[in-house]
Length: 245
Image 1 (cartoon, rainbow, N blue to C red):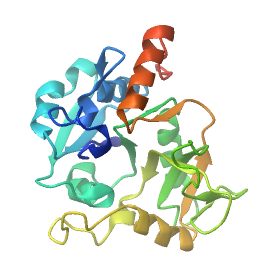
Image 2: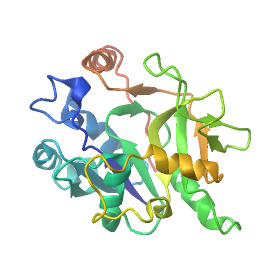
Image 3: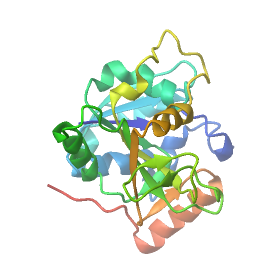
């Protein structure tokens, strides 16, 4: 199973830190933020990684190389201009292939067990239903900076963009390539393909499932949140949990 780490954002809210350093390379706990993801993926048995980049992307490639240092194999999907989430994923589809894949936002800190992605993909392959979910999203309690949330989840694990109460999308999900059918690199324009409309349309058809994560989760979207996380790690040796095979 492949994983895509979304790393193409400009990081406007992180300025001036991101004026000369791409957000995924900002240090936290003594190492670039993105390397925490790489280590957890390797520990979970997810070794094939695709990383998209745009702003200062050459720094990402120079720092991470082929990923061997962290036990993974990295392929890069450069974007001349950031294509937003759905656009970036669609642009990388030739690298991701035809099987379900995991997507992780580079700017989160979370201990959701990544092995769950493998279990979800196996469940989809084993289902009798000819049309399994197009995506399975991880939701978390709404943080103070996003009080209204994104999606509601029912007792069957189906997501809705219209129901209440809503929880926040954690920036973690398992996706089927079919969700991005019709979005091709030739049709993309900068800013033309956000993920929200695709998800909401599929939710209306009952094609998006999800689960609620009760553990660690931080959206590292501002210098203040980055500094607080760095302090927590240095003070308490906080680390997202890993499960080694």
